[in-house]
Length: 376
Image 1 (cartoon, rainbow, N blue to C red):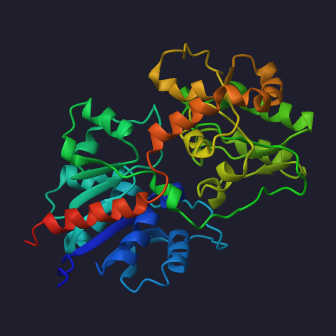
Image 2 (image 1 turned 135 degrees about the vertical axis):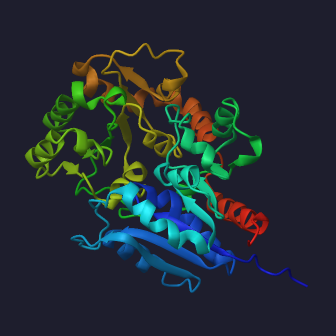
Image 3 (image 1 turned 180 degrees about the horizontal axis):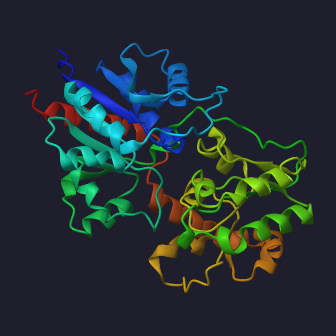
């Protein structure tokens, strides 16, 4: 005799940038494939709606719902990152609609204002988006989640070291590794030159962009021996609009592929097809290292990084202290990779946990929360 399915509805919040989707959507698929739990996907724009409608067609338990303040935007169907509605007013207006949910799942901290500020029957489950030594783990909103899903035991321990309750953090493995709707399965170039992915971070204190970025790009482009994917964090252009100007300057060259808002930036396409990772402190490097390959890191801010756990990822490749040496470091990267391969594999494994089955484990945790949440 089989047990009765858990009662109640699960709501997933797709309210933020498209970069959150691959961290959250695999859990939707896993939950829909393994249970009859009713699932509402709340979307903030027509871009989110278009993507999720296409992917969820096989799942009869899934319903896509528009949030109050839903924004219809120009959409070519490829998932370009849209301009979002103002988040806080949208959340406040959404609050009454979440009363029918027993569990609410989100991938960003802003949505945790709801359980932090308002009495709610629903339990909030937060899943991680990205992982890395510089994650903002001390934000007080994190304590409002009934459960937080993290990739690895090492990541979980960073929260326990801060005094978080052990039963509110579960290591599931890297959920995004189960995302199957990638834009590119092969490099977007006509030739077979080595592909360099340059992905600077969007926060100025963590980024190579403001001091070195444009020069780094121009040096690689002028050298001509590499295919360059220039795909910075989606939010960089908000802080540095000159990024778009540089992309217009070089974007027509056959050995350059620029992306500022495409879904391929966030779906694992570029970290999957690149031969060399060039960056600073973005957690994308850990995703890249699911399959160890050469890395080069840019110390544009003259950080005293050795021994600093915030820069633990920089043990995975050569660290460049002079912008004039960037192309030379790329030339050395393949030759030096044997020195770093074992370090990379260990670092990625400790950071990401299991890279298969994370979505299924996350879905099982959501069902567990659903089963233990009173209906009234």
